[in-house]
Image 1: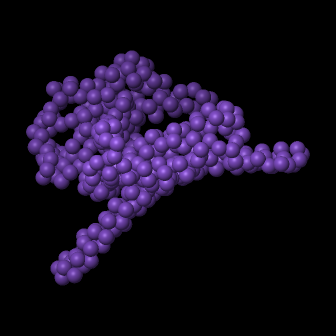
Image 2: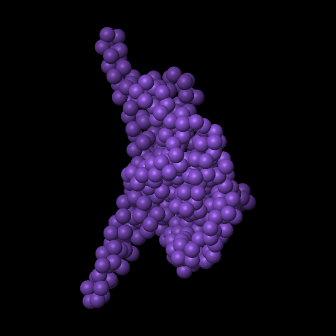
Length: 396
C-alpha cells in the first residue's frame, strides 16, 4: 500500500516528476537534516559520540569496538535496517534478566548523551561527502519536495521522530478546509444579499446543500435533524474534496489513509453519543441501545444484558466499518487504474501499439468511474452518518 505511483501511504514530502523539481545540492550543508540523519557516515559519527559520552558517565560499558559491532549487527536484523543508535540504546536500556534487573544499566542515560548530537556540528566538522555520493543523493531527492517541519523532527520521509510533524495529507486536508471556508463564506454572503440564489456556481452549491438536507440528513435522522445539518454538510464536502484530490496526479487522496477515514468515523460516533447523552442522559444513551421489550423480569434481564453487549459491540463495529468502507473504495479504484496502466510497462513494438488504445481507453473509463465513486462515497458516508446519529438520538 505504499506504491510510489498511488501515494496511498502518507509521507512528509510531495513527489513530482524529477524534471519539475531537480535536486542540485552541492555539499552537506545543502541537504535537509532528515536526509543527513539517514546517512551511514552520520549515523556512525553519532554512535561514536553518544557512546563516548555514555562511557564517561557510566561504569560497565563495553568497549567501543564491541559496541559498534553489536549495533551494526542489530541493524542487519529484520526491521532494524537504517535505524540510528538511539533506537538500539532504547532496546538495550529496556532489557531485563529473569530476576527483573536491568541487563545494561549504563544505557539508561542515553537521552542525555543523545542531546550532544547536532546535525549542524556534523556539517561543520565532518569530512566532505564525495561527488559520487552527492550525485546519488541528488538523483534520489530529485522530484521530492520535503515539507518543512518547524514543530518536530523526522526520523525519515515517512515517520516522525519527535514533536508535531506536518505530513502531505495534513497539507491537503488544510487546503480543503481553507477552500471550504472561502467558498461557503462567499456562498452565505450571496444568499444574504439575494432572496433567490443567482449564478451557476451558486445554484450548483445550493442544489447540493438542499438535496443533502432534504433527501439525506432529515430522512436519516428524523425529528431534530436540522441542528446536525451544518456538521454533516461539512463532512460531505470535506470527504468529497479529499476524494477528488486523488484524481490529481502526484497528490493522492487523504481518504486513502486509515488515520483520516477512522477519524471521520470517530467524529460521527462522538457526535451521535454526545447528542444522545444530551437527550437521554449519560446513562440513558447507552441503555437506549437495547430496544424496548415487554418481557417478564426473569427472562428480560439476561436477554437485555446479552442484547446490550451485542448492540454495544455493533455500535463500535459499524462505525469502524464506516471508516474502512470509505478507505477501501478509494484504494480499490487506484489499484484498478494501476493494474490497467501497468499492462503496457513490459510491452514493446507492435504489441504495445495494439494494446495502447485499449489501455488508454480503459484508463479513461475507469477514471470516469473513479470520479463517480468520489461523489458516491461522500454521499454514502454522509447518509450512513445520518442514520447512525439518528439511531443514537431516538428511542428504539
